[in-house]
Amino acid sequence: MKSKDSDYEVIITGSGVAGLTCGALLAKDGVKVLIVEKNPFVGGYCHSFKKEGFTFDLVSILLGCSEGGKIYKILKEIGAEKGLEFIRIKKYLTLHGIDDEVIEISSELIEVIENLTVMFPSDKEGIKGLFQTMDGIYKDLYIMPDSFISGLQFLSGNHLRKYGNKTYRELLDEFISNKRLKFILSSIAITFGGMTADMVSALYISNVIMTFFKEGGYLPIGGIQRLPDAVSKVFCHSGGTLIAGERVNKITIDKGMVTGIELSDGSVISTSCVVSNIDAHQTFFSLIGEKNLQDNYLEKLRLFRSSTSAFVVNLGLDLDIDNLPLSHMTLLLPAADPDELTFEVQRMINGNVSGFCIAHIPTLSDPSLAPEGKHVINLITLPSYDCNRNWTDEGNIISEKMICELERLIPKVSANIVHKSFLTPLTLEKYALNYKGACYGWSHTPAQFGMKRLQPKTPFKGLFLTGHWTVPGGGVTASMISGFMTSKIANEYLRNECGT
Image (tube, rainbow, N blue to C red; front, side, top):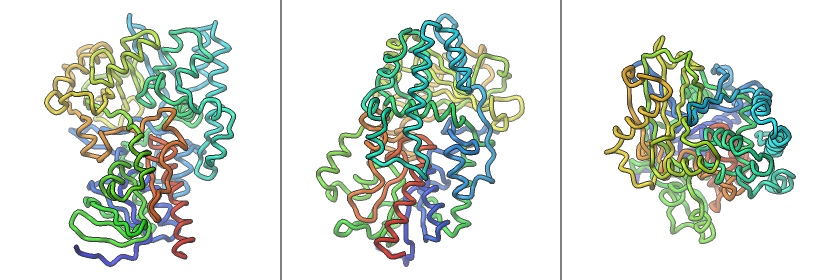
């Protein structure tokens, strides 16, 4: 093996937004940081690609980009806020149900509460109580980097104690009696986490929904890639080193302590501190090795369950859709009550692509993503990696089925497609090396949310985690908060252990 001279104090494996955030903050503090990325670009899932003049994003929405919001505060701390321009999503969600029923969900909380109260007057007090409770959860979980709650605080919050082990469906059942209203509120949750109300943590979905309403949902103008590119630029300007197109094969450990990394070309770079921003499965089972894990930690890892994956059809349309009943997110729903919706979502997770489809239409907010007069639509279904579909061979067939569903909303859409491509769970697994093509790291069940996820500190001295496999959870906002947290922990480790 070749050994490279190294004076890096911290090496970060992976350049997802958590790794970039962590690296940029450490470099800003004068720490000598190396980020190693297997792809020729940075950002992980926070990535855009261009085809035939259309820009397609892997991430559909950012939360908290307004001044005072979580992402904005982190970008300002890094010094990257001036290099980005965001546009707020004004019209977030349209539900297309059976019998051609159309329900529009505003991006403004007051309007949502007012409209739901008009539609369901008998549930007026329940609607009020539900959103007050979700707001209380949001406040208890206000996980800004400068005030991240400790495990003790997590257990002591009134709302967190009461709902910590409950699902979103249990929260809805406490306040809402009308089944159709539960169906609508359950549908909102699907767009934020890809899980049924019966499975997703009440704390997780309440926090995400209220973050959206209180801090706003945004897109970076020009595509999601603008965000990691801006943070990467600051990282490099602050003295950080980025190696792109190089894979880490091993994190070297000696007597329970990190000693460095080994690259795919066989070279070794020494360091006493490694931050892993990659899949937890890969980190521990491949880069470190199962034989090096303590039994209790190994058992803990095996109990975790990953989130769902995705099958995405990317469409470029030469069609005017501005006057149709569509929103940034549009759901085609083959159900009319929460129990049927749960059944249909479970069918989707099991690989059935008929009857249920999520349409993401970013050009309704940011026209720059397509040539003038044209639009981008991403059709999304959220199957399990293990649903026994041959995604590679069946990709075109599945795509056509999903486009047929879209015809319900946009007549003659098939005749106006100028670009079509698709991503499968296998594509996502290969692209990001996320275990089973997981979209959100571990799934956000009550047993795997918040402080119950993996912690940044690991059993190995000098090895830390960041990203959506650790606290506080999945999504770009949570991942950036994770990067902020881990930068502070790594900095403290360097001061205490290495005297830097």
